[in-house]
View 1: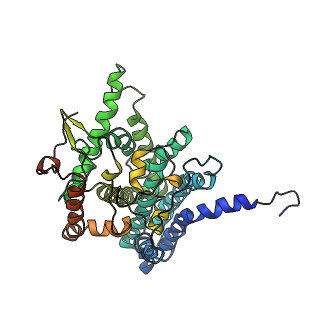
View 2: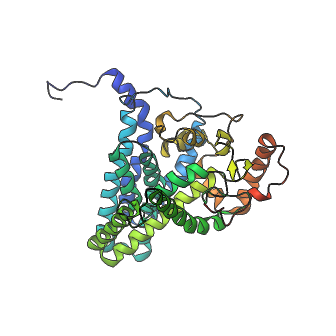
View 3: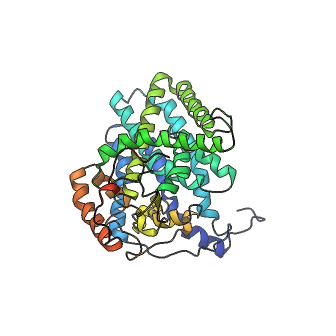
Length: 383
């Protein structure tokens, strides 16, 4: 260390040590390159590390129910903010370098190349879109731009409009496509949300412009930015890897979207806000989101599993999201990585989750006897 370099203070070291577990996601980036370099058995490393390693750590480390001080300053948040900010350029470097390397790697056959980008999609979906979700909720324009870049890398840019303008407003009602209905299996949910979320996102932006007496074609419509960024990534994929690069890029985007929608499916399954009449619903409460206090998976997902508090304070940074106990918010039996595995097997999912939904209904809404109007899986109410 140079003589004039100031040592890191004990207070700063303490802040760094508290934030460091959330930096574990960085280990996934070299693992993706390892899969590309070795092929074969190495292809399973990224999915296993993302899904099963953190589930095993959840089992070993248990729950974290402690709450950080919500009055923490920007200085206190520095090391937490940094992981979300540096992720976008690091993910870009991983994606671009693999789009160049993999199509020309002679030791990889076609199936292995697909396998590499399956792992890439797991990373860009589990971590990339999730970090984009964190960034899109922040006030600094730079952070929102980082969110747009992360979403464009997975061809799901409209998620920002849908999430901010539709989901947070209509969560737990038939007007929110993302809120999974009771008994709606993931394999029915998934094609529905792919279609309805794009339509609802575009309609929401169009309606906002109409209130300003502007047409949807106005350049302030963020969909122009979404389309431009996605086209730029398609062009980059072609320049780096030819048509093979384009196909691999699109494939990883599909895997990332699947990962995102698995999580969306879990977060509000079967939880509905009480209809008050005349199209009005009760306010969003902690009881309208599934939560998980599992320590390791919250490290990976930057506290996304503290989902009730996210809906209460959407712009609250992940480090200070608050935990809710079982009296205030419904709790999942496992962290999201394990629950996504259950979601892919509808009979298993219903066996685990339907009794919990019924118990939740009996606890919070004993006066509601007919839940059929709340269970509609198709045709959200018109806007």
